[in-house]
Amino acid sequence: MTRGRIEREKVTVRHMIELWCRHQHGGSFLCDECRELCEYSLARLENCMFGENKTKCHKCSVHCYKPEMREKIREVMRYSGPRMLFHHPVEAMIFLINK
Image 1 (cartoon, rainbow, N blue to C red):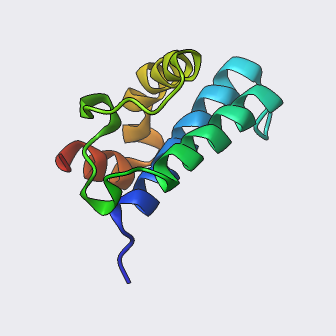
Image 2 (image 1 turned 60 degrees about the vertical axis):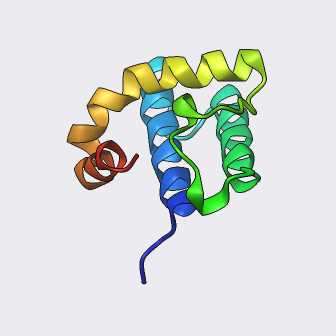
């Protein structure tokens, strides 16, 4: 069974936040700050008004993230995005290919 876009993006964003947290905060598990960002991001995906027809969030016409959370997730993605090719190559390629 294939996962839908929302479920794939949930897995990808969680992996990106885990990579970031491991590098920035040095733990084996998500720290409180990163756990909060992850829960927030997953909730935004779950409640996306476009559902399975959504685009990538940075291309979306509706910005549902609070400004401070949006800046945090941008920072995480700038760091983790390139590293996903080494840590989760299949997910990274699917993310790059999908609109």
